Image (cartoon, rainbow, N blue to C red; front, side):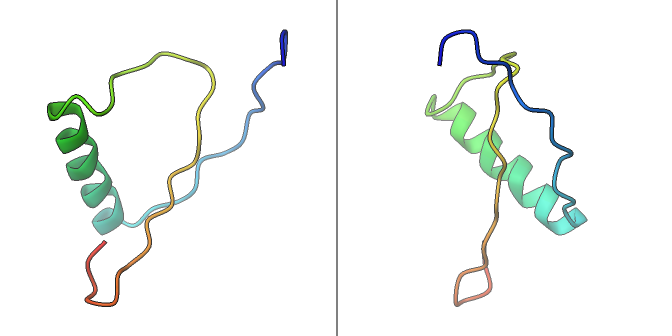
Length: 56
């Protein structure tokens, strides 16, 4: 929507294990050039879900 303003929402809390896993996955995606750094005011929440084997 042209002219729309981003909505400010507090970030989800993450455990230190989840935060470490998120950083690891983001670094890998950056290294593979699947994602790139952004300074956009828009964003999306990250939700980590454990697999059946316990990994994320």
